[in-house]
Length: 209
Image 1 (cartoon, rainbow, N blue to C red):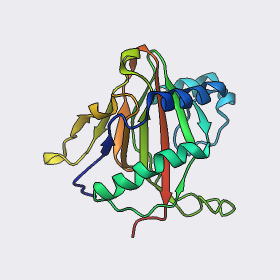
Image 2: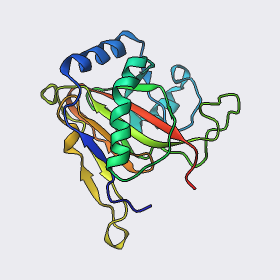
Image 3: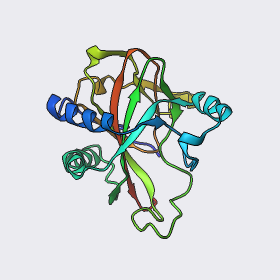
Image 4: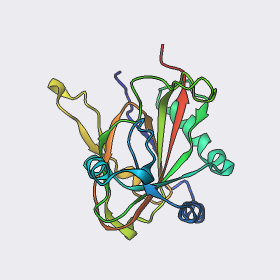
């Protein structure tokens, strides 16, 4: 799918107090090593080999937040980005918010957030038959508190099919929000100093027609 805008951003729209509140909520919960894709294994029961293989692709610690006020705060920016960027995707549900810690040498290599098939559990009506359409990442940390951890996009439609990698510097100011289609490839590079805190939300809708 060719897009005029591969992401849309809002700079420093969350106050430092709001960022601190989300960080506090995230740190109060027990975190675990982040897994990838539709892997349903308990991250606390991974073998040494499984952890080693996982860390070749992704190495970060996460926990989950479902506080209604967070959704109420972020949803207006998702709707605005969806309209302003010209995507106009139909979506109607947000997954749990992923609070992520990237500590020294942690990263997440190239990936896209969408899956090849919709969610399959018919007992979960909020998810069943839907796909991830819009991804949101929010910078909670002051950029002075860490180095590295850059968010990069690969638009993958450059001339002659060559990758078109772009560093998303717009995410750097604390409280900034970046929204992008979930099929867009991206990565978080290794943190070289300090800790980078972020919040990620995936937003679902029925498959594109």
